Image (cartoon, rainbow, N blue to C red; front, side):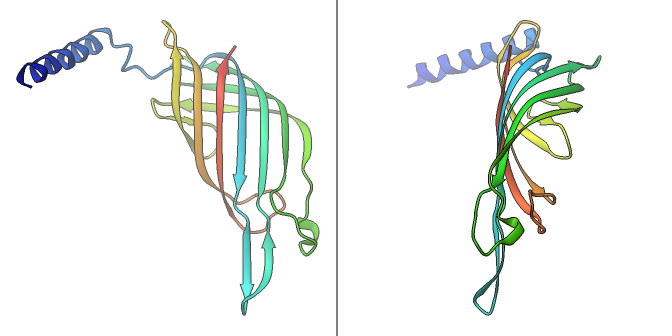
Length: 176
């Protein structure tokens, strides 16, 4: 048992020294170039009651998106501009004959968007709230070829809903 502990300590020390000398592992991965993005979003439905009788149903919504994404970093390498072009499908995740105008079928449409982004070792931010992120396949230029994203956020403009919803979004970016 003593020999095993001595060997493990030497291996851990060697890994720490090599990471400290190369510096690459500690750097924030860059996002740059063209990526394919796949996102899904699911917002909670809300049911309100009055004297144990359903008073109102806000159905929440679901969406799926597929984009081509162009990322152009600024001089820092971890912030810059993004341009999305692709397709969205969305609609209510609950339908009922009692919901009136909130009874929306799924729909599909093309979408073009642009904006800014910033990323750290653990977050990717576009819009008002950050995604948690894990990067994969980082090349010798420190550019991530893969990223997995997830976030939970309030959505005060949830599709056809008049009350705020909690929405979970998750997706992937794959460099082309």
